[in-house]
Amino acid sequence: MKNSIAERVFDFLKNYPPFNILKTDDLLEISKQVSIIYMEKGDTLFKRGDTFHEYFYIVRNGAITSYHTNIENKQEVVNISDAGDIFGVRPLIAKEDYKLTATANEESIVYAIPINTFQSVTQNNTSVYKFLITAFATNAYDPFTAEETGKIFSDYLPNTSQDVVSLQTANYSKKPICCNVDASLKEAALAMSKHKIGCIIVVDSNKHPLGIITNSDIKNKIATGLFPIETPVTNIMSSPVVTNKKNLTVADGQLQMIKHNIGHLCITKDGTVNSKLIGVLTHHDVLVTLGNNPSVILKEIKRADRTKKLRTARLKANTLLKSYLEQNIPISHILKIISQINDAITVRAIEIALQKMSTPPPVTFSWMSIGSQGRKEQLLFTDQDNAIVFENVPEKNYEKTQLYFLELAKHVNKSLNKIGFEYCEADMIASNSEWCKSLEKWKAQFNNWILNPDDKAILLSSIFFDFSCIYGNKNLINELSNSIYESLSKTTLFFKFLGRDAIKSPPPLGFFKQFLVEENGDQKDLFNIKSRALMPLIDAARLLILNSNIIGINNTSERYEKLTEIEPNNKELYQSCSYAFKALSKFKTKQGLLHNNTGKFIELETLTKEEKLKLRRCFKPIQEIQETLKIRFDLKNFM
Image (cartoon, rainbow, N blue to C red):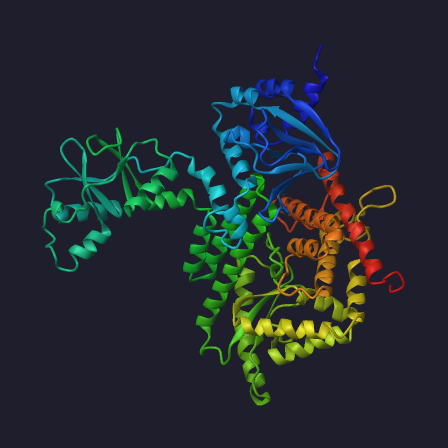
């Protein structure tokens, strides 16, 4: 008799990593041993400090929240695992007691995967191991990271993805160019020139490495006149060399180079200087392997002297983005990384544009990113929204000053367009004189929008309230922010207009729980995930944070997290909104990468039943937050 339960488990697991890379027989063996756990909302699977289980887990239906309890005994959400996500892998990787608490975020079904069975069928599968290492590192609570969330490029996230790559065997040069110990420097230099290489290994008659000569040695010791070109190679070579065995990993090679402050590592038969040279690993080889590390991309951006190079770097970021999504790295961390890269791209585009200007800026200025980039939520190539605020000048100098910054903005906007960020259809870019103004005029503009609201004012101010300083004088932005909040303190009508805008899109499901799709035009029958799902959450977060007089928090999920602090009675709602926003953002990004577009419009027929269920689950907080806005801002009669 067939085991129908095991078959249903098998049919589910085969769609998700790392199970989707297992052989059918191996996965079926695991499926037979899986335990099925039903959890009510609020049920706890394991707590921090519990002795580790003989299982790790995957969510079948529902969602499981992983919490860390801080020193103030407050729970902090580390991750929310959705259908297909694995969690509780610490016993599998580290054989340690749990450091997090796992609780059902809603009614859920969890599959418990027996560790012993899993290990027995995957012990020689490197791909599975790499995936699990990444999942463990991504979802593990790191107190250093929690305290230093801004330092994402130093010790945490880049390394979680890099660690997977670092487990690979290093790809070194298998046919190193050598010269005999009796050769002259001239002979060695000619060989280096012929083969177009940056180093040559000095070997004895048994091909044992004795030393290394690099371009730097020739520059510092020959070009400076310290030695003649005919000098023996032994006079200028660096010796002894650092060696390693042929099966070293990228991480091993990188650590050796850092430890000895070298750029070349000799690979020998037994890993010592007393055996035959078989290859050379260079610092360049390591960088090529780790080429999609954020730190490397940032360095490329800073060195770029042309728009073409900036585009190349930004395309690498898209590859990085896809890799992170495949590894199930939390979307909040992905947003921070890609936002850092986008901001760095913009900064470098501005620096290149300034070099093209005939004179330096007449006064200080600030380049503002607005909309999704201003909220640090721009993952894909979308249209660019930006503005310039420059220092106040006498009226007689205003036109000339503005013309300078309009010309600068034209160069920057053109570069960003070539990189892949389309021009804004509504022309909300800094090269438009409406979005390039002095601080005084910007203050007056926001004051007018706030105190004399109408439909156009709400549309524009909604976009411009999500701004951040990317380049230049941050004091200008701070002063503008203070002026905005001063104007907000003088009105309640403006909040009603914002509230009306936030609830204009109804919840994305119709009466029979069918997705509301576009009814006409090129997008007929497509689901607009941006306007129907993401924007209601974005608009609600903006309204609530402005009404609470909170300055400096623009990111949507961070806004909801801040609201949980100041309104603990609504904590559950705001956490649900934050989670829904992240899940929807992840879904939109995956769709965009899949179809090479913005991911805004989705063809529902291409989604699996599981994907549709995930989407539907994100819609409930939208309805609840909109009902909250209606009551709080008395919007039922203000439509």
